[in-house]
Length: 367
Ligand code: ARG
Image (tube, rainbow, N blue to C red):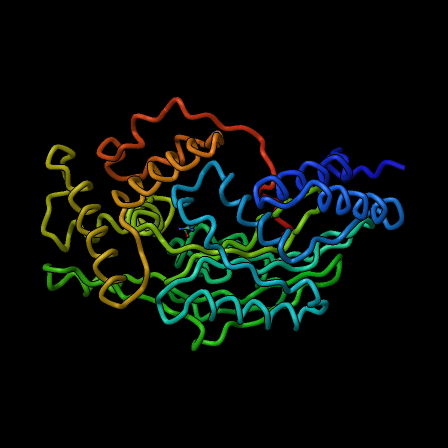
């Protein structure tokens, strides 16, 4: 019998090509590999699925990072720490594991790239979903005076308010964890303050910058993507790295569709906003980004500037080429949103993107 998973791929074929990759790259013997493939095929025949060893899982999660076309930070793919929480079967147990992930990854600011993997989708289609886009993120509220908080969180915030949640209504309310098993009612778990590291933004030489009361959280932990390894779909597999400064300073706090702070920053800097030609937006952006990097660093929180990240990406490319592996890349995502032409990635627009697995992919929003 051939087992087809939802998107039409054949689990056996996916499993075999993943196991071949794993054995090739980790230098194990042909014999062992043949034995493992036979074991997996027997399991799929009997149960419709199979289970990864923790080593296969860790390898798959790391290679999925290496394969991610949109990530500039992939030089460190081998250092990803993988925590196996496949045994967590209740919302409470999952929430506890998520808090452990936050604490472990945050590590008082010395951020550890970490992935926690929960039970995969079953052959019968049962699955765990974390509704949050990131484990730590700010709420967004639509009000008569416009949006308060993060506009990117409005739909999620409204969905959980319908489930009974209510926030303080500030610009920086931390959202609760929202966990759903199968079609059950999702359960909400607040994240205790002690788990949340945030950085208040100060500028290295502009004293009154701090009056803007800008802040951001320390660790971006993506929690809505699906990790697919060898035909098995991990629908709950949150992972994190550390921030590149521009994600916060040139997007989250700067985009007109997000916190839109450039006008307030320009006013603080005493810039004339009536004209484009004085480059007030660029000046505001520059000082905001300097403040982000400076503040994270002086609080002992890991962060990388976009020039260093771009150099690291070039090193990653060289290493991959030395291994005869093609680098999967979406150029428009790899160039940083600030001064892209001042980084060496600018000249790499020939890079191409392909479907390769293992990978992380977006999933349908469950609300
Ligand atoms: N861009 C997203 C954010 O600003 C985070 C994406 C992942 N970033 C990372 N450095 N691993 O929150």
